[in-house]
Amino acid sequence: MTACTICKSEHLIKLNEVEEILYKNTTLHIYSEYTKCENCGNEFISKEQGRQNDIYFLEAKHKADGLMSPDEIKRARIKLGLTQANAAKIFGGGDNAFSKYERGEVTQSSAMDKLIRLCLVNQTNLQYLKENSDVSSKINDIDFLLSTKNSSCDPVSFLKVK
Image (cartoon, rainbow, N blue to C red; front, side):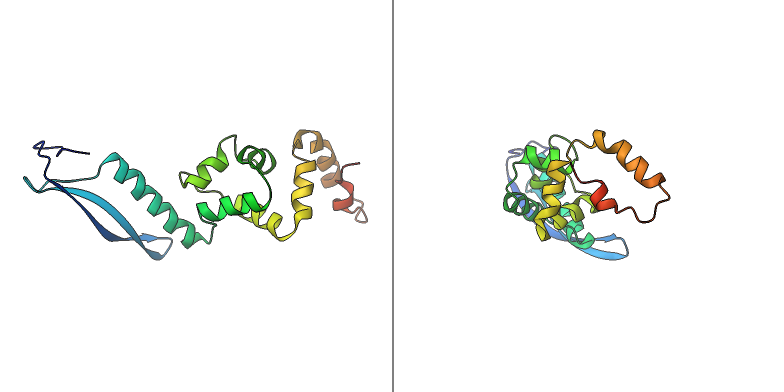
């Protein structure tokens, strides 16, 4: 932004502060940027500052929730040898999910975070997801498995692709 939203002066200074926000019984310290007009004293947040402040807030939430950061998700995806499109197909979340996770625009669910971590720990998990990314064909198998009273049935071997 090049002019004050009130007096239209171009004498602006960019400022920042650390805000304290209560989140899930803990206090988050979040970096925040804003602009101040030297002419009239008006303080405001530009669109770009607003976007960046949202990213700072999501980063603090990721950390507080124990979730991977956007950069960690990107590094995990690359380590798993996946494109963003492949990752979305394999893990779910929508066509643009990984693009948004990696840009910090959207926070992944705790379940998604755990699923990615499971694949990092054991590539067999990733292979299973790759082979079974079309879950619609597995619904009847899962329904049968859940309804069976046969306790000797091994669910892992039962669901393996034949």
